[in-house]
Amino acid sequence: MDISEIKQIFKQGLKAVIELVNSLYARINELNKKVEELEKKLSSEKSENKKLNNQKSKDSSNSSKPPSTDGFQKKNKKKTQSLRQKSNKKSGGQLGHKGTTLKMVSNPDMKVPITVSNCKDCNHHFIETEKHTENKQVIDIPPLEVFVTEYEVEVGLCPHCKTKTIGDFPFCYKKDIQYGPNLKSYVVYENKYNFIPLNRIVESVRDLFHVSLSEGTVCNFIKEFNRIINKPVEVIKQGLIKSKIVGFDESGGRCNGKLNWFHVATNEFLTYFSFHPKRGKKAMDSAGILPFFKGKAVHDCFASYYNYILEHVLCNAHVLRELIFEKEENLQKWAGEMINLLLSIKLEVKERIESGKSKLSSKNIAQYEEKYDRILKKGFRKNPYREKEANKKGKAKQTDTYNLLNRLRNHKKEFLAFMYDFEVPFDNNLSERDIRMLKVYIKISGCFRSLWGAESFCRIRSYLLTARKNGVCAYKAINDAFYHRPFVPNIPE
Figure 1 (cartoon, rainbow, N blue to C red):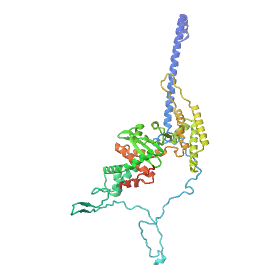
Figure 2 (cartoon, one colour):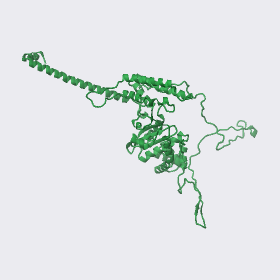
Figure 3 (cartoon, rainbow, N blue to C red):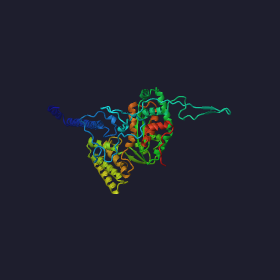
Figure 4 (tube, rainbow, N blue to C red):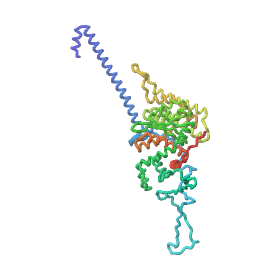
C-alpha cells in the first residue's frame, strides 16, 4: 500500500480509516500466530534432533545397549573414560602370586627307555657305571578312536522252576547295541556348552572318531540328558527361593519366529533360567521364584519387579552408564560428581571388607548420604520440573536427565544398599554374565526353532552353570548325569 492509497482512504472518512486499522491488526495477529507455530515447530524439531543425536551417541559404555550394537567406532571418536580406578599395584604378577607352569608328574602313564651304548666321538663302549638317565616328559592325548565293549551276559534257566536268571548288566545299557555315556557326553558338551551347531558336531564325531551320527541322534542325546537332570534343576530352583540375595535379569530371544523372553535368577552358587512369551509379571510368576522369594532382589529397576513385596536392590552398573552419558553428551557436571561418589563408596566398602570389617560407621554413612542428596539438588536446579502447558492434556513430558535424577532420588536406599549391607553386590553383573551366553547362542543359531528347544536350553544351562559355580567342570557334570549320578547342589536348610 503506497501513500496515494492511504490519502484516498483518509478522504473517505473515519469509517474507512478504522476498517484499515482493523485489517492491519488482523494481519498482524495472523502473522504472530504463524510465528508462534513456527517457533513451536522449531522447538519440537530441536528436541527431536537432540533426541536422535542422543540415541546416536549411546553405546554399551554409556547406556544399557549391548556391545553387539556398537559397530565400528570412528577413529576420531572420543573414547569414554573408564570407570576402573587405578590401583597402586605394578603390572604383571603380584608378590605372593602362585604361578602355573608345566610340571613333571611322578607317575607317568608310560615310560619309553632311550639307550646309548657307544660314545659318538671316539666310539668308546659305555659300561653301566658310566651312564645315568635324564628324564623328559611329553604331555599329550592318546589317539582318538572309538572303543567298543561287548558284554557277554550269561543267562541261566533253572531246570526245576524254569526261572530265567540273567547276569547283572550295567544299568545304563538297555539295548543290544547303543552309544555309550562318554560319546553322549562329548556331543551334549559341544552343543549345549560350546554352542557348536548340530551339523558341525556330526562332522567332528565322524572326523575324530569315525562314527556316523545323524542330527536326530544328537537331539535324542540332548532329550535324554534333559530328562536326567529333572531333580538337580528343581533343587536349584528351591535353593534360590531360600537364598538371602538373588540377582534377576531378562533378555529377549526369538522362538518360532516371535520375540520371547529368557529370565535368569542367580547367586554365587546357583543359576536358574526360565522361558516365557512375556517379559513382565506373568513371566516372573511362571518362573516360580519371585512369588515365593523373601530375600533381597538385585535388578535393573524394571518396573515389573516392584510387583513383589520384598527388599529391592538396584544395579549401579546400569546407572553409572547413564551418568557417563549425561556427563559427556549433555555436559551435566553433577553426573560426574555422582559417578565419583558411587565409586568412592564402592572402594571404601572393598577396603573395609579386605580389612575384615563388616560395616561402615554411622558417621561415614551419614556423610555419604548427605553428599548424595547435595549432588541431586545441584542436578534438579539445572534440570527443573517441566510444568504442564495450559492447552495440553496429561502430564508434561520430562527430560531423560530429569527422569534419571528422579529415579536416583526415589530409589536412594536401593542404589546405596551395598553401603548398608556388605553382602549386597554393587551391581547386577553376576546375572548379566550368566545371561550373556544366551546372546552368544542366538548370534550363532539365529533363533530357537521350537518351544522345547528354548526350554531345554534353559534347563541345561541352569544345570551346567550351577555345576561350574560349585567347582564341577561342565563335561564331568554331563558325564556323571549320563552315568545316572548327576550333580545335585547342596542347599543348606
